[in-house]
Image (tube, rainbow, N blue to C red):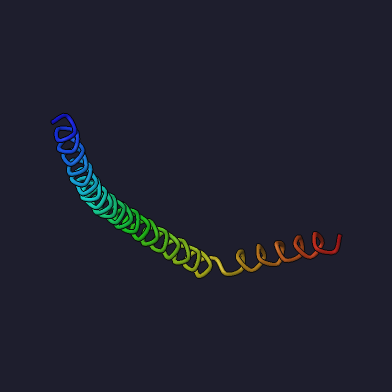
Length: 96
């Protein structure tokens, strides 16, 4: 009779382990899906931030170029003298 109880308990433990294995697999799949969704959401958020910053940088650069062009149009002689001076300075620096 004792061996019958041991066999029954062994069978019950074996079934419990199989159920536990199934539960762990389900939990692992759920965590993988949750992590994947979280990672994708974070990537989308970062992509949006980068796009926004790139747009701002592009607009700022365009504005700076427009301001520079306006300044050159308003003072062509001074702009030409500045460009000449910068060119001479760069030429001397490169010759060293």
